[in-house]
Image 1 (cartoon, rainbow, N blue to C red):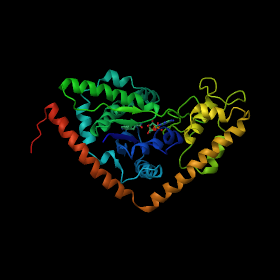
Image 2: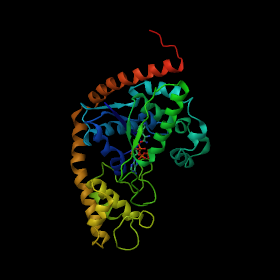
Image 3: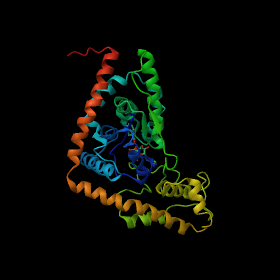
Length: 330
Ligand code: ATP
Ligand code: LTN
């Protein structure tokens, strides 16, 4: 059976961008693939974070995974830090990725340029190495992610080539990034030229937001000159962003969404339709999220997930150790 793997790092409150670009797509693979979905808690340490916040965010994400339709019987839901093979393979793989290629990663450049040069952690720089290990430990065929993570999966593909060539065998499987056709990069509602991001929240819609606030945020989203509704991210970034949100949540194409609003020449009316659909999706989602948190089942889910993930990951790790010449004894 083919495998799918993805994860989200618990660095803050999840946003509508996380939902549309990643979360909502995770369950697509749970019936036909072996599905591994984890919480990238080690990755969350790559920027300073309050320990209590990190723990709370972590539990939240498990509840969000279930709310988004993941079934722990079918999908292995686990914490990265519960599977020590992630850290071990990271130690090995870091020797096969180069400083030059890591320094070209957009995420590293974006995050580090906002920081004091003398306080950029090594972990932030080496972030993609750990991510390659996450993917390769599970022999993932597909990796569903938003646009901003595509570059990291491509780097992982380069590593697979390099590693397999060096040892002259098909040790690692070639992973395929799966980027949604609509909504791969949802922008901030207050500045539609920048990505909606949970660690730098400006103009974000949070999945936990009160629904009245959600409506207010959408009604006051920054729009563009004119009154026509069509997709043109360069000249109409605000309207194009709202069209993406609408189309993705309605599971239709951008063209179909444009068709629906072609005779609507009032931004207010259009925004109301966008707010309606967001609220329609978030209402049952939030109810399920609260139910999971109240059920007290989080630890049970994570224990079972850790058991299954460790089994697969440790098998891969042994193969890797043997391949590179580490002495694996009985
Ligand atoms: P941070 O601000 O901490 O970097 P983030 O909000 O960018 O976090 P991640 O944890 O990096 O979120 O990403 C989780 C998943 O959500 C990834 O697959 C990522 O591509 C996707 N994603 C994040 N932001 C967006 C967005 N604005 N639009 C679409 N997908 C997104
Ligand atoms: N870098 C990802 C989170 C992540 C991930 C992964 C996603 C860590 N390891 C492996 C897919 C596969 C992000 O969302 N920022």
